[in-house]
Image (cartoon, rainbow, N blue to C red; front, side, top):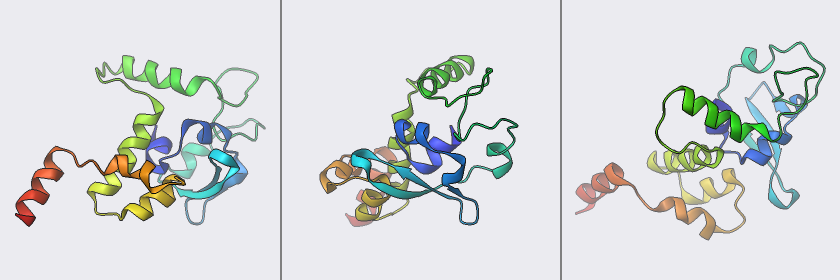
Length: 146
């Protein structure tokens, strides 16, 4: 969950990441996005959490069953299971992390063109859907500029 949130990656991008795609020096990863476009994303996840495995699978995220293999179709299912276990009533799904990531960047003042690049959006109009300011931030800006 932390990796999805801190990178803003699509679930399909996360599923394809290999351990060798990570750069521990600057906490970044190269991901293959839509249209086979590569981009660099940054993460906050602790190295020990991501490297504590003892298997030989090259995938970053793997199943906990034997034989160990890439965790492709189960990320969505695992998130739902964790949400149920934590009695979270909100609908939890991978893209919600991406949306929250973009909104957090926007709320913290990141320029829209930066958000567009870091999310890997080709068109600015795709990124602008995140620019719909929410509750408290909208109120704050209203008070500041009116």
